[in-house]
Length: 303
Image (tube, rainbow, N blue to C red; front, side):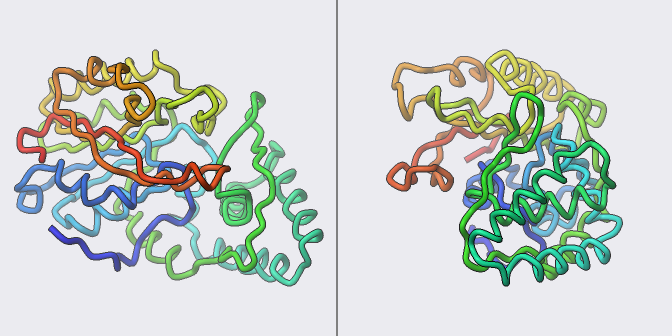
């Protein structure tokens, strides 16, 4: 089941927890006859960077309808601008790239902080939001997206020698694919109206932190605590009762505590598989490495 790595459409941003490395495992969790099902609807309530979205729509052309959602309004705004106005977005990203790259280190940091301040202002167009979102993602520390208690983006400047701020080829390929996609912004539960037979959901929620200091979940100011994890499980129960299929990913608490069976207990009625994943984003290099994650599904032939 070897997959190609040459899909023209791919994530346009770096994203904590991006699933590119787990596509092989996700494919194993799908129905064996996935490629032969007709008129499949694909729903992704936590789209994030879109690694699974862009892969699955190219891998399975029989998916005739796709719906994506995220609570991060700036991220969803960027998806919509790529979908509807990619030409002007590319022009603006080229301008930012041409201004930023020739600068020395100190001037780059000043330029970054000016753009970050503008991004955090309330009054700006969708077009500005999308351009600044991509610029900041490409030039901030580790490509993180993090907000403070006031909902303001607060990731510091990164030190990349030659960041690709305007990836025209990817943006155009993504825009073409997004013409097939309905884009929502809000709570994941609103996607429940699409549930039914021949509908496949993929859930990649903010992961449950393995330690108190490992919470990369503040991509929105509301957070995603254990009560939210339980609400998501209830939602999976709901869509499964409506004959939808689902696959969900999350952290594996047993990486740090062998007795922590939070997800094993929470999803005990479904299939649970542990898979290996690389922790790519950590402020300390010696803590980047292979760990296990859990994959949950109600697909009968999963693995």
